[in-house]
Each structure stands twice: as structure tokens, then as C-alpha cells.
Length: 118
Image (cartoon, rainbow, N blue to C red; front, side, top):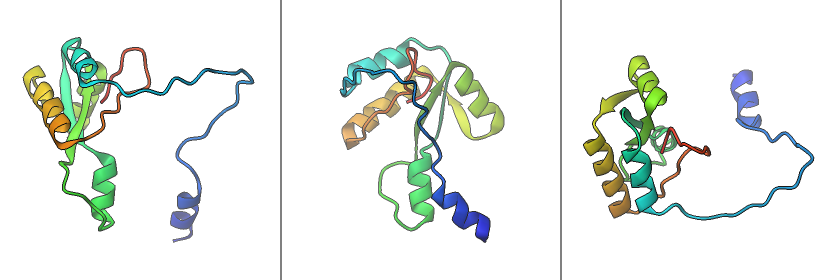
């Protein structure tokens, strides 16, 4: 039990200072850009949203679909190979984007030049 308490106090990520100033340009990626990301890839997988899954387990879930996080390329192959998700077609990936748009989900791509997850 002591380990569980300690784990909850330690953040999953930390910031390492690089002693340089960066310019922050917040913005929301339009749906059309998300569609471009999907169309630029050849292999796809979908998995449960770990955030929603965790909240459901804690009894704080919502009515949004859990199976909504998408992976592309090598990430898609890894998710499928480990059983953490399932392979899908490009058409199903686009349908998941459409559903997300319709129900008001915020699309969050990986913070990379060529995102491998949304």
C-alpha cells in the first residue's frame, strides 16, 4: 500500500530546463488538419482512451466512447501486436474522427512534426 501512495505523489512527466526561451503559440488543430494526418498514413489502430478508462474505473466516467485513441505507422503496429488496441482501416479512422467532431471531443495529436497518435 505504501507504494501506491508514493506513486500518486510522483508526476508521470517532468520538465527539464534547457535554459532557453521558447515562444508558445497555442492553437486548436482544425478537424481538416486531423484528417490530413490520417490520410498521410498507411497503417492504423484504435485503442481505449486511457483517461476515460481510468475515470470509469474510479466511478467518474462519462458517456463518451472509450475506444477513440488512434495510432499510426509503427505505433499502430505496436498497439495491435501487444493487444492494447486493434488494427483499423483508413476509412474507420476517418469515421472515428467524424464521430469525435460530432460529439465535441478535442483532438490531441502527439507533439511531433509527424504525429503518430491522435
